[in-house]
Image (cartoon, rainbow, N blue to C red):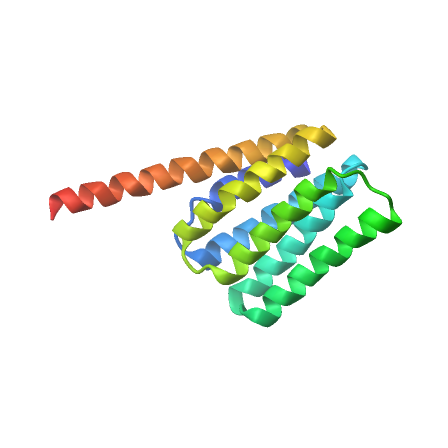
Length: 168
């Protein structure tokens, strides 16, 4: 159920034109999909990455900059090191953590919904790869839905821009 909630929330989130509204709705979706991954029992990397991302998005509504970015990059790298060296996790966790780092840089530094959508394509593809490798059906649906939503919104925005250009 948490995976399904995340899919619906992120579908709504990626359609937001206001970046802070996107960050808030996305934070809710990330908290939900984080719970989903923890409940799977074999996808802690994604659970941790999504939990950090949820917190990051809430903080990024009000605070951005080098300190916030550095904190969340360091947190991601610390959890990666913990899982890699202490828990002896498989190499596939790299997909989850690289995805999380891309999302982190984009969420904290970018202020345009258009730029965030473009930046997140690679992160969503890496997340999709991880979800498939750990056997998460809802994680897979989550990432595919997000990619479709990104591409549809980019296409729709481009069509509107072209119509506006022709009309003027």
